[in-house]
Picture 1 (cartoon, one colour):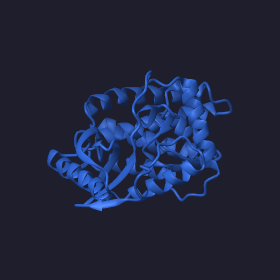
Picture 2 (cartoon, helix red, strand yellow; picture 1 turned 180 degrees about the vertical axis):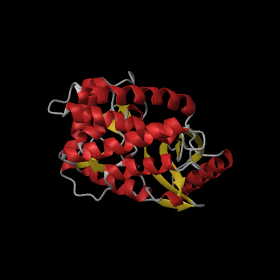
Picture 3 (tube, one colour; picture 1 turned 90 degrees about the vertical axis):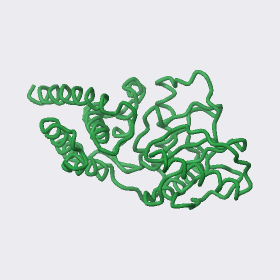
Picture 4 (cartoon, one colour; picture 1 turned 60 degrees about the vertical axis):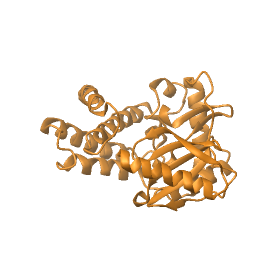
Length: 283
């Protein structure tokens, strides 16, 4: 968020917590992107604050409650207040349990795979409306095609990203793999190490699709602990996901630190992966 907007967001979170009887005199920024993640003190509550226009907070709250009831390894909403979305000063504020980091923070591939399997098992039984993963691919395609939103993207790179997104979206769909509810972005940044074990956060990206799409966000070593996975489909999903996150970095409004440098590196990886994939198909 921009600095002026972030100040308003922090104030909205503090006043919301205080109005609910939680002692909140200070806020520490834990993550700053399209939304602000704060640790409110001294009540020790985690607050997620997003512009009300995003309208995804209710989806996340409802899903978090359902997944927790199903025994899935997800972060819990703050138990001292009613689990709902609070609106203040143009922001949606949700309050969550704050988990003190434990050491070691790095999760082993085996534990990562186990946590993801538990999440998928619970999600498989959950009848919850969610967008299809291809809807998110389409959003990336629209961004690539929009020169005003991605003015710094070179024509050759625009063609590479657009072609990769289009080709793999079609190829993955044509495989006809079994689909279910997914996290959508279960990368290491969305998996906490806690005293309660690994817990997934940031459920706003949940969608429906093959489990390989979720697994494509995890480190490659995690896939080695997932028997039964379609390795060819997983390889295609990894390239697709890389093309998607590379596209987000070229958005003129993207605020990820060092995002453009990463985008350049990822473009090289995509080009190499696409070339390998083409040779494998020819072979």
